[in-house]
Length: 369
Image (cartoon, rainbow, N blue to C red; front, side, top):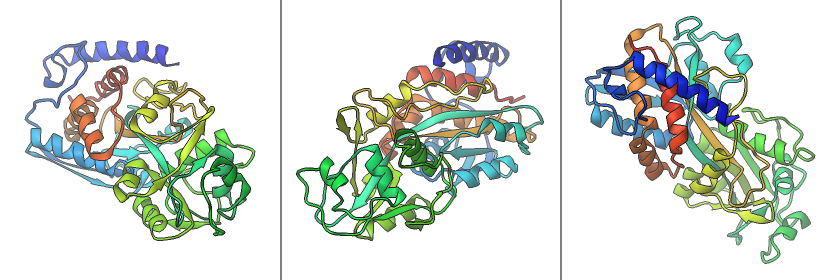
């Protein structure tokens, strides 16, 4: 549970801070890092992965490079699956992923960029709702419960004038129009989070367990977040899913999701609320802060279709030269300044102060000497 992990990681933070006393990033052992660290870092690193994080990463990179002008950071938003694979192969010293590595994946390894048996850290530093986006001529609002949403994406509801949709939207007139569900063509953490919601909340209709690869051959496949957004926007009768920041950016219509007895629109606050009431996964290493999202919560005001995207790094790097840059960058990502920059640019939800303390404790595990 969260309480026990807080105590565990807090203890690690104290030890790490004492060991690193004198470093600019740990001036006081008990203080959480809230600002970009002052340093004389220089060099270039490249990361990649989650396309949902792309706008946030741009904001983080701009802020960090302003404070560290001799550092260059590049990021390839090739998708979470590609990012994890590249990190495992040692091609990237850090990766963004819309899901944490599974325990069995970590045990199987290898992680070629890390010192053998050093472990990895996984930091939940980007929280964002996944918007259910649609484009139906003449329809501006849409209420969906989990079962109806699952039916639309599973192909059991094939027309927009289906009685199940009408029952949830009594004030809306739907056309006699075929439903075209749009899904990601690539291995995607957004897909994994979305299918996790469908499976947990509507398992009778959506019978496939969560997976980053879309499990059905029906519907229209599109590459990346941008591809899904473009396909939905360019069609009529389309419905898809995408990071909410991109939906807002394109001005797409989005569905409200039934939670308890109310329909909840997505918002950063509602996304943060579901994370705050969800526990950490059990059986993880001390720096592995994977969250077990409570998708079926009926607490008022939560939005259950949320994406928690992680920054992933080595505890100890085979190439020790990259460690200070990665560590400094992740400290900025987790800082109040970095989180506010991401929220302003991407509409994400800043992590809470308590989660920041745990994230900083995990970052402190990165060996820089």
